[in-house]
Length: 188
Image (cartoon, rainbow, N blue to C red; front, side, top):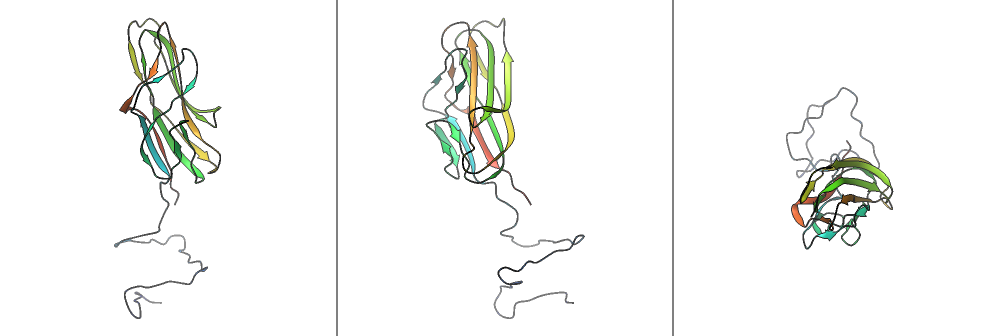
């Protein structure tokens, strides 16, 4: 029984050796009054992308993958700007979010924005029915989900659908209104 452990020499103290398990029994409290490292998990990989170089033309009344062509952050090089896929290289649970901004140069009747796992499984969806609204319409639609990824082949995309009366809808080029991102959730 001791109240304090100090290193024999220097300023570093090591408890146990490689391979040892140090157990803190139930009911005990660890208080940290200094600097800590190596505790808990990390929120990596993480990413946040947007569309900045040009609007993406969308087909009328057709589901289309939104391609965000500008990486603001991509800590694990997991986002592909050519196909719009985030494929995390670390297994775990992730919070994924998107806000696709659509411009329809004529009234539209329906908008759907969704997150798709592996191109087919819908994780989350938002929709707006604007029947009777005339004129140009800009629509922001926030959607998010928590999903487990296997760390090797699972991927997520943003998928949009717009039904317009005439002309061609676009995914707007906007760094602050049209974005897609996510990060790994930590576990303790």
